[in-house]
Image (tube, rainbow, N blue to C red; front, side, top):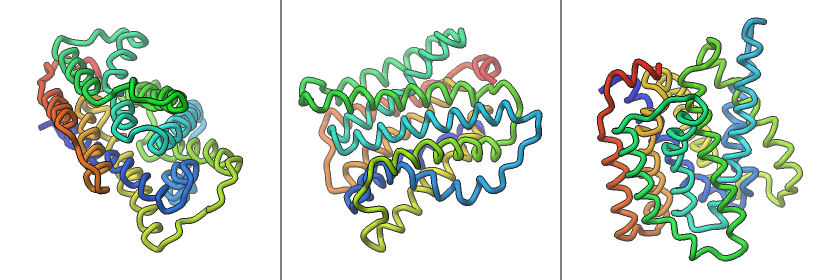
Length: 287
């Protein structure tokens, strides 16, 4: 297995913990705005003070800052959806980003997908269709459902840019610029939401906040930043589909829920998509 693939897979497992941890913290009294803010705020406190950019890096740093702001808003939409629509549907919408990535690469970067990549994407679409049932949504659930699509779109754009950035910038500097963007857009949104509770209501809640910020955000983000340039955008998105499996199991079963037959079949299709081999030529082109 390519070392870049291993980094992406470990990152995917970490990212997949987000739905479970977000639900736990919202169950502890925190709003979606605060959960999303704390997801980035703690790592930002540690990393952003060490942000140092040369004049030649200002432009790339600004690009990462904008991506950070966009990803912050997109993640807020996703976490809010977890409490407004069926959890499994929110998860499957978010993890449609491998398909979004192929479409973005084809439409914006003129990267025509290979046959194997199309097959992988089709398997993911079929898997999502087994679980996503719009006819079961109430009228008030349509807006959070549609806003949930913002997350996979923004993440797909991020995957492509990080796989082949315009200018060089150290991975940790990219993370710091992105975290700064996350916090500066989410902090005012959290304040404007006027939450009744600003901190977890139990000692365990603080442990979950640290887990959300560390295991589900900082560590996988760093591994993702290292791995994406090594394997390319399309393979990053396909390998990262492992997140969906982790998110479904942790976001439902671990919290006392259950997965039905169709959801298990959907996870099997995702694993099949991950096992499809891509020619080495694609790797060289993407990197």
